[in-house]
Image (spheres, rainbow, N blue to C red):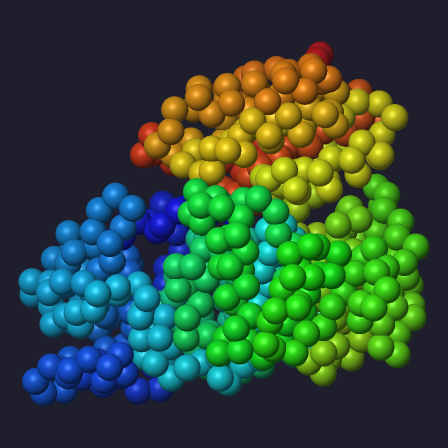
Length: 515
């Protein structure tokens, strides 16, 4: 899931946004106590009792604290009256808010995680919370980790870029890593529902924007690092620093690191927490290794080597890159006391992750897939694998998301065209950018490769129909960039659009009688 550079102060929820599941706190907390927890002078008297927190005025529940933060386009203070009318009894901000007793701090976002954790009596202390971070592979590794925990009989929670799930309910994810109040609410719900473990996908935004502050992680997995999200971080060094901050001892008790990645090796050498390493390339010295990797259209297999372990593994997930993800999941589970056989059984049983090389089958004579790949490093792993699945044509559909790192737009088109026979450039979520400018940047990169035929079709539905019209028996069509995402957003408007659903419709139209 793509992340905004900074979350809007009070972004209106999309029409499909699910309701909050605010657990009843062990006890409501007086505002004076929250002030003391932040090192502030307590207001006169105990103040109102607070039962929850949110930074979105449209999601306020009675007895909430409303966090009015500086946003990308406007300040949350603008919505204080709406928050109060919805039942907010207090506020956190960098300025006093009219009508609400306010805890005033210079950087309210920087303290919101600790405040929310205190409000919910630090739920991560009662759970084994696992984090997964990296440029690529976070979502799949998080789901593999959750599958291994469940196979071992653990009662689990899952917070990935695809879904948020507790034993009692599930809902689509709103962003890769929830904002701090939501994260602490979900962890508190897990504790209340008797869960023992949680797998959390942690983006660089999640660390840099303090969303995971106040959370103690039993262990964290580092998958890899490539050039991405430079609109937020500015350069790769700052991006790496944000990822590395997750592994500081105050946050994380154990680091599980991909030794095949140069930044992973650097991380393993510098962290002050215990380190376990893994290598899909069979790197000597890694604690967990894979050998004899085989990846085809039916799945992925490899020989798993680790402490007391030498066995074959057969994943239903497609792509050799899933070996890295499975190794990370198995390594972190073993290191925290989960039986290897249970971890492997869970990994082997996972049938798929929405939007991650997700098959779309409508009876067509070629392979059609949807994938979330949205950076060059991911393309360089994915597209050669897909090329190897066919002796015919590889057709790639892609675009660029607006208000994101503009430096990766042309490289996305160029890398796709070097592997594909046909590249169909179309619109993704332009947000506030000009869709034509985004398309042209991607198309220019694709044309510069001088290999593939380049087609430009702004309408995403029409682009999918064009892509499937180009494919014949034995070919591969892949729709890149959005994965599981459910909306297209442009010009301040959003509309429902799921790539897998619309690709299935395009395949059905192709197969319709008379066509």
